[in-house]
Amino acid sequence: MQISNDFHTVDFDSIPIDSFWKTGDERENKMHRIHAYPAKFPAFITTKALEYATLKGAKINVIADTFCGCGTVAYEATRNGKDFWGCDINPVATLIAEAKSQKYSNEKLNKYFLEILSNFDLLAIARTEIENINERIKHWFREEQIENLLKLKSAIHKTIPSKSHYLKFFLCAFSNILKPTSVWLTKSIKPQVDPNKKHVDVITAFSEQFKKNLFKKKYNF
Picture 1: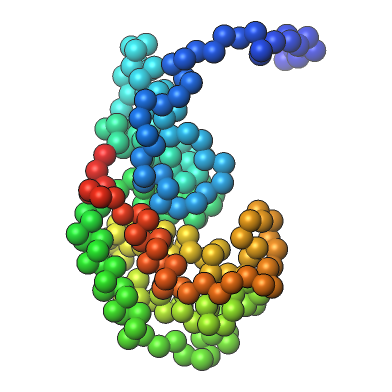
Picture 2 (picture 1 turned 30 degrees about the vertical axis):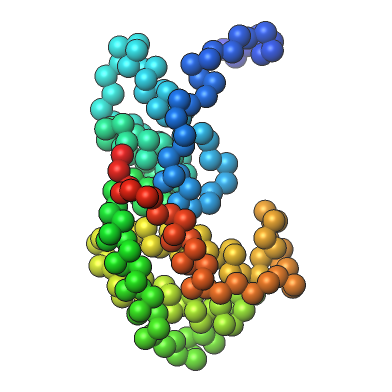
C-alpha cells in the first residue's frame, strides 16, 4: 500500500453556497423537542438528502444511521415513508429515537397521563428503598425528589403496558425532568452542584413536560 504525503488545500471560502442545502422549507416538527439532547443537527437535512437522492434517480427504501443519537433521522425517515434502522451506545438516545419514531393519539396520551397522576397519589415508597439507592443518585438529588421520582417511575410502569410504545413517550418525559429536579447547576454542561438551586416539584415538572410534548393535533407524520 502506498501512502501519499501530498495534500490538496481547499479554500472553503471560495466554494459557492448551494441554496438547496441552506435551509429547510418548513418549521421543524415539534416531535424533535420531545427530549433535550446535545449536538442535534437540523432535521431538514434528512428530508433534503432524500429529495436530492430522488432527483439523482436513487430509489430509497431503507435508511440506516449507525450513530442515531436522539433519532432525528429516524423520525424524518419514517415521516417520509421510509423504513429505518439505527443504533447508538447511549440508552437514553435510543429511548428518545424509539419514542420519536411512533405515532400517538392525544386522547390516549391524556388518558394515560391522568392515570399516572392517580397512581402516583396511591403509591408509597418503602424507606429502605430510598436508603439503599445508589450513592451517586443521593449526591445529585434531595431525598424528597428521590422518593417522588421513584413513585413517578413506578406509576408510569404500573399504568402503561410494557409492550406499548406509549410507555417510551412517558419515560422520555420522565428522563427529561431529571436534570431540572436535581441539584445539577442548570446552565452547566459539566457536572456541578448548585447548593442554592430552587426546589422543583417532580409532578409539576412532569406535568409541564407532558403538556410541552403535546400537539394541538395528533402526532402524525
